Length: 367
Image 1: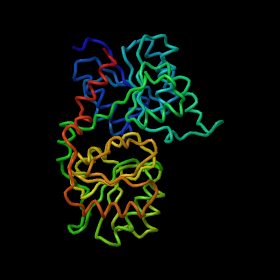
Image 2 (image 1 turned 120 degrees about the horizontal axis):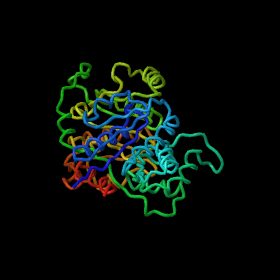
Image 3 (image 1 turned 180 degrees about the vertical axis):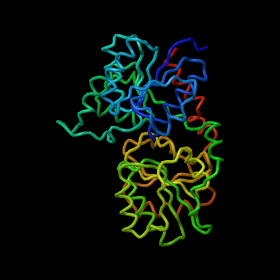
């Protein structure tokens, strides 16, 4: 049974992103299990603020940059001494581990890595490694535990951070399947006013950033659209919007590609998709693919380096293609739409990603 232990979670912001969503859901789940929970954020603005349970204490450092949270985090740990501090994303993980050491608090710092090291986009330094990777290699051994969201993420950390002691690294998948998720998937879809009844609807979900490689998806869609009446909906926001909009125009896809930005509930749109598509070049654990499968959708996805290939081995409803190959992607879309006798994943497979099962694994660090 939970005690009155204080459990804390730290995020740089509540902006849209898979890592932010997962940590907010974990904080809410710990609260519902009876723990005293405090959610620390550098900047509390963002769409996920409304997702925080009203009884979870939200503490804002009012800092726009992660490094600016360092001194406030040291003071917080020294004063509050939480039993466990959960944190995610490498830059936030690094300052949390160092802040704990300086504070002298007995807090267990549990860091979560949601993506492979190839996606750590920092200025390269000697030996081809980024400065952040070099720092992480020195401080990660001081963490109480390092949670990797897939075996691929664990492999990349052990290799690129040269972590010889793997005992602190554990694989815990993301909590992406819950009753709340299914309830959200049944909500209305007001953005679908553009949808033609005759058109095949492809849906993609994710930030508009280079790691998602939307250019490959757009080129593949342009090829597929020449054969079949189809439309593409991309849900997400990010720094690549201008480039992607220019590409949509260059390819003559303005009438059939729609990028409305971030939506708080993408699941309702995934539910009405004819096919889910995912074109990333780097990936830790693609929550959206698993959620699409849970909504009885087929998917075409890319095989990323160190990506979570273990998740889709033997899964009939997923066609995995090489990264950066639009023609192969377009052909896979056609194949998945016309395939017959496609078996859906088993209940046991989905249970690996259930909210209850995953929260219990995180709770073990608080025992």
